[in-house]
Length: 523
Image (cartoon, rainbow, N blue to C red; front, top):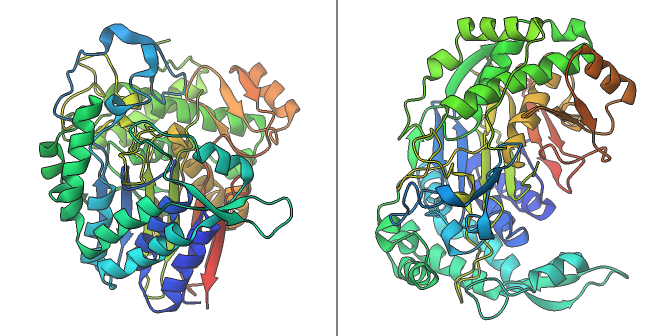
């Protein structure tokens, strides 16, 4: 098998698989597929967004961080008196008039173009111009969507006189949707293809974006665009059982995954039994412990001194285990769940052993499109703490914390499981479940990703409907409130990943059954 790719969008998976089949490497496939994702799910991801990419090659491992950054015009205390409440899951703050959720003031400086350009030009093998062509083709010719989705996209966004999405013909399938094209996006992508990231941050596109931000009262300036830079680091590492886990530094969610695993390493989860009441309780409380530390101690590492070593230390894990075993209450500080699915992910493995995990997003989208450009902007201002002086408070140039965490599990130095997800703060939870299922419960990628999930980031454990009522009743008796969702799938991230057999190199891909994506191998 030449490689494998998995993602929530089948068309993007197919395009990425074709790149691998034609001899492209994992970065080529990832970047090409990512631009197609932007066309087919333009309210989830796009060049107005942000993201993280985890790249493993034979010679190195790097993490590209291209989070959105607060604009030069923000003020730390500007929204302190407008707080309604904090989302119970930690995903954002509700303010009066939704000023941080929708419109120009919700937008941070986009990083996606810079991140993908750096990845492609430094680690890919294909020319930048070539990787954008499939997305330009799809945006020009259209793609099939459900009728309800098509109608929603036809609504005119803020900043644009008309919707950029236009119908180009009816689906040939009886009762199907219609073909939707985005000619504005196709033109913008063509400009990027012929130029480089520079055209987005210093060229004509940058000037159009900055003028629109000024006109709409946004915080992002031309200078913010001019000085945007991708942060390049190595992943952070931690051991779990006999495996090494490599994930991202703050402001991403990797440290919270690693801390939860460090706490759980002190328990024999396999012996405890999969999805038993004791298992659900123990894993939930470990999640809650790590989220308590995250709320108090984790912010953008460029602005906040985050002690990764202490968070991942055995001493801290032991203290949390003592709290869990004593059935003590763990409090996560909140201002008082909303789940953002408006993110996407893809995992790629190529025949040379290169592995890429890419998560990119618009947050939940600002609903702003600059006239003629065809893409929506992020709304990353929604997850900054409006109260000054906190680890995640608003500051110019700062990135707010996210759940993004493209993660690689290794056996020695060999890749074993690349995994990631969209899903707001529950990205962390979804990835955690997949890792536990592969390592502790010896599941295949499909089994690990399809397994029932539960989440604990507040005073109530949220469980999918496939967690039996009798188990939930027993968890309550042990000492924690739990609510079963009415849905068997969805609501707790959309996980996608690939297991690599360290001995044979055989690939086993999994796509979340709660989403519409797929895993596709290339022979």
